[in-house]
Image (cartoon, rainbow, N blue to C red; front, side, top):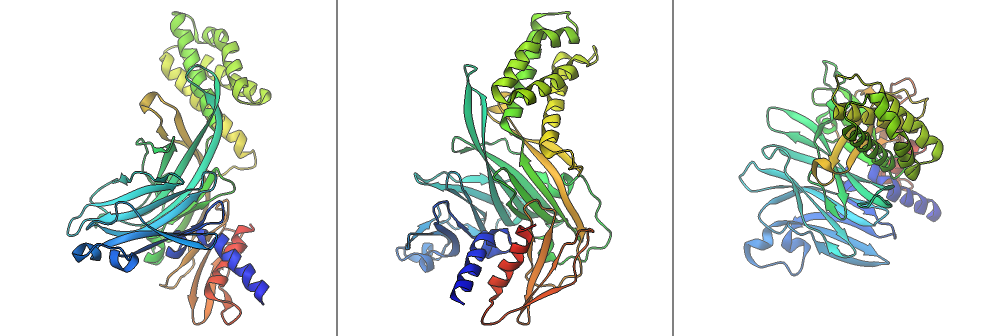
Amino acid sequence: MIARRLLLASLLAVFAPVAGHAAAANSAIGASGELYSMHSGTYRSLFTNAPAGEAGDNVVLALDIVRNGASQRLLVPGTDGVERERWPALTVDRATNRVFLVWEAQRPNFPLSVLNLIALSDEGWGSVFQFAADPFTYKSNPQLATTLDRYQTFGAEGEVVTATRTILHLVWFDDDGDRQRVLYTPLVVEGGEVLQSNRIFDLPELAFGTEAPAAASAPAEMRQKPQVRSGRDGQSVVIAFVAPGSDVLSSLELRSVTGELVSFADKARAQVIETGIQNPGMGRRGIAEKARAQVIETGRKLMRREVSDYLANVFLDGFGDSAPGVALEDAAEWARAQVIETGVSLRRGIADKALADVIEIGRSDGTGGTSHLLDVRQASRRELPPLPDKDLRVFLSQKGDDAAVAWEVDGTVRYHESTADGGWSPVRTLALGPGLSDEEAFALVARRLADR
């Protein structure tokens, strides 16, 4: 019995972050086994050294860290003022062991509502990054996940260097009173700093503009809680959401486009443009042939020979076939987009014929810097079964193709799980008792999805 309890507890710790539930979003395990958890409450209720007077009644956020049996509580910077802090969530970058925290903040009696982001590393707290988006909307249920990329690119002197980037994938529910939306933004972190060039995406539009059915029977609990979880590896995440006015659960798999591919495409574009400028009057085919050796050499510095040569030919043939009336820069940009799409398709594999697209999520150092791209794949789209108006938890598989919706009622945990034909199973039931708690039951449902 003790061994079984320990197994279930470990399952809960591992799979809790995939659940659509506040407790899961508020806690995570670090790379060295640390347990991080966030708490919200008045200053005086969470800290013995709280200031006297009204300041002690301000709502603050605290981060608890349990490491090697020792517990430490930290005040989250920027939360000790009169603003109301709610909806805290966190994630841990497993490679760097940095903790990222996000929460909603609103001044009393004022419509301004923002999402705040901060990171904690071995060097201490970073600066609070205030992500306002539309400041006159009510934001709730932010969820956060991270991906980390290590890739080869070119340095300032043209040498090959190793670069890293962390992408924070943030989703939330947005309500201005007249319109409700589920939104997503990817925040690129380079050199410890969050780039200011991030874009905001409306998730239903990002999901290839799929139409929602006229009926909208899904509980508000589902529509107001978009979910994001880590994917198959450290370079992908899965997002699930129910669009406002819909009863369809949609999921997307988002994967970083490899930095080597983007670096090659950017460099090849610059090389043919420079060749064209240096050879005025030369046709596109001539420019492509003159730049061919340089473009091939560029690719071989970053990628395997067979891959780089194939992609170099795709780029040069696309550029060479462009119409004479198309501007040089436009022809180079079109060839760049084509080679990126080809490289992404090779990575997806021939068997994956799902709806997919490549989106730009930001650039380093303004418009002339490194591009950051994501490969977006529609993982699934299912009309939800009838669900109770209760605290519902959503669990996702690592690719986002499968899901389960679970809830607790009358001493049981009940759930529907997705089926291969695009539908849902009948209600399954796990009876609770001395040998199975509700959290352990939810962890078992999560494990079923993780195994798919």
